[in-house]
Length: 343
Ligand code: PAP
Image (tube, rainbow, N blue to C red; front, side, top):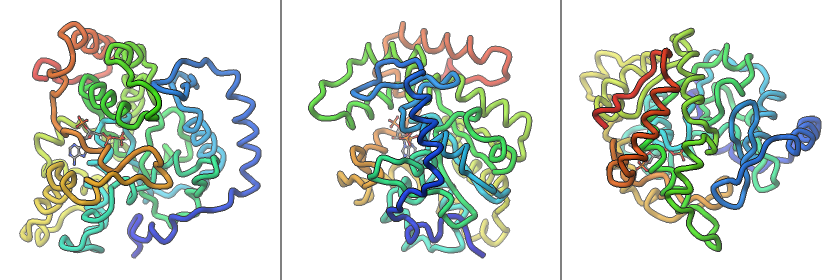
């Protein structure tokens, strides 16, 4: 039986954009100038669409998905995250769980391929800038895709059919991670963005796919309404008990570990394979390697420290309090919280 993405590489090719997409491009061109804009973190501005700040390219991706993502299946899987919440890690863990009968651990694709190249970026896959215009609907089903899009911007046909895993993270650590990442990948001719300026943007929600709080709440509510189709996890919890979460993910994805697999230590092997220490030290992830899909981002940019609580080394107490207060205010009454005292 085909497993998600096991034949991805053969389909990962440049394609001519289908003419049926022209209507969506036209809609995008009409909507774009009407949207509120704010200065982006670097040269590209962000636009506010239905409450969320997006790069124009992500907006186009969202529109294309809404117009052209046809016939999703219950076996399709989408990993959703706000940026810097742990998508690289979860892509690796979920890919390894789902495809564990296809690959052995000695020659596993994760040893030679960055997780971002094994799990396509949904809205990024559907872009029209000429450099990369593959279409998700050309991939073989079942799909395993990753997305940063908020729940409310995805079509109902998809949110009511596919299975979602959502990972969130303490916004303080997300901000620190994002600030480092953005300065690494900025166009080299531009000066770095200051910590203070970035903090102001982030805490006002003017951040890619932000506000991060609204993003998390959308998936949180969906997971409470439909726990069998939306699994909501926190980076901090997965970090603390990775093997427990590997089992939970396998159960949720409908591929629980058998007694034999438990005896063979497959869970622990997956945990080790996908650990920050292992992945970040692989040649493929150490080298500064950009791809056609990510022309300004190196494989190594997805790995920094991989720790919980690194914010303490960067944020002033006032900054930390400000983000914690926003988190408390936004999540109030939702049942969602972070163990903010511990971090
Ligand atoms: P993305 O939004 O660009 O996909 P994402 O992978 O979600 O990035 O987040 C990157 C963070 O995950 C980095 O955190 P840091 O800056 O605080 O260090 C990165 O180091 C961390 N990360 C990457 N791989 C792993 C892993 N295998 N285990 C734990 N954390 C990881």
